[in-house]
Length: 413
Image (tube, rainbow, N blue to C red; front, side, top):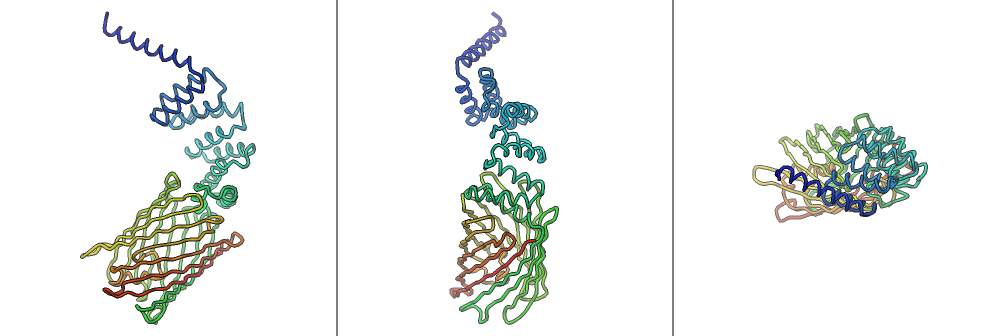
């Protein structure tokens, strides 16, 4: 017999045998096989074929139909996915999972208005659906309807305070929701050994939400070493995509108690599983240039947020590093939390003491701890209170303590 015909016959028998075996299995058994093919083997084509066989047995099995639609979505067969989802919702307009899958498909393909219509139709049947409410908040944020998104995500957090995805989204929405913010803050630093006089820093800032993101102008007044000075800062937080946003910053001062120039840049990414990360640099000029590189990884978990950050400062003789770990406990909305911070070394992002980075003492060892409370009042007012202690080796084998107190008030409008 010709080898070609023999192989064809073997293949035919094999396929026929699989079809017969599949016909002997129930639609539930085939559904289980399809899920294993998709999740364990990552073989979407096989999972699609098995799901179709299951639907031959049970044409109106909605859960399998929705799963098939998701498989089409993951395989970039969007038109086929839409056909499946619309078929399910035509027969069962109250099917929550089909609504979520269809709305997510349109959201991922930047059809936010269409997705919002789908989600709203689903919420008419399931007004307390946490998944649909979260998707709607994302859509409203994407459509720049920030005030609506803010109200929605806050109500979702009251319904489900441990929803980490809602928590990570809420912070971004809250910054976007208020077009304008004015804030004033005061920081006091007292030294028991290193300096004779305490340091004072008063800051006034104005933030404006633009089409590209938030822009913040700030004026800092400082009193250090019995000298006064003023620093001007400009920060921006441009939104680059659904995943990425940036921090861009610059500052200038003609007074010795501040760095003459400062600049900063970080690229932030909102990652799956409620993770977030950033990488960037800080630049300070005290007559000579200081470059500092930074990166962090953060994670939302139930009512908590954890972040680990490092600063790396290279020089001719050595590389200095500092680390900080921050933990927050949220007891209300996106701006209601207690925060504990533990660290080693100095942070260039702390304007209250970054002048020390311009001295040799930043290369010596230091440890710090701080506790802060952030609370909203009537949704439009925000207060922040912080206390801190830093034990620093300001000369070789000579240590002293720095005590910090911070007060801040912000109004949104």
